[in-house]
Image (cartoon, rainbow, N blue to C red):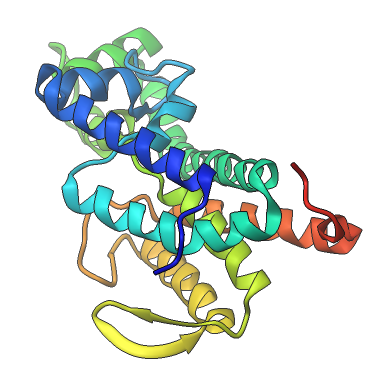
Length: 249
């Protein structure tokens, strides 16, 4: 069995502690209000959520698969790059994931919000109705429809280390392109240079179509793409500049 590296071990511990805290304090609601990543226009948003959401998970299955991927891909990446470069990719990928997912959310949100402003509603009225899910008297059916369209985005939240892990997976694939990997439900060995781009492509298609290919809902597909792209770009830059000749401790 592959020996776990030190930084990966500490990340695993932090994620498990955060999950226990989520389950034990306030029946999960309190921790989610504090630490999940909320839409920036929402009153629930706080700046620290940009980082803390990376250590939150929506359930035991979500936690297990992410931590399994962290051990599987994170350990060999850290062993080659060292702890500092590993952490740099990990958190940079998490930030890249947030940026791409929020960019997609704003792409959906702003046209509807602007249309509501043009229809005569004030910004405060729109925020109030989106926050309370209550329509004020005199709101037209057209306005209600626009509010319904952007309501899920305004009240969306993000949790999980998936964006970070997609960046680590991209780094692993660049370091070990011929390593053979398998999906749990498709036990066919596929080389990393095909497997990881394939996973990213599936996320991209799912994000654009709004339909998860694997049937799981409530997945921030563009966050996965953003994390993987960030990890790839960092590794490409380091390789181009030949920073990988020396470990960065």
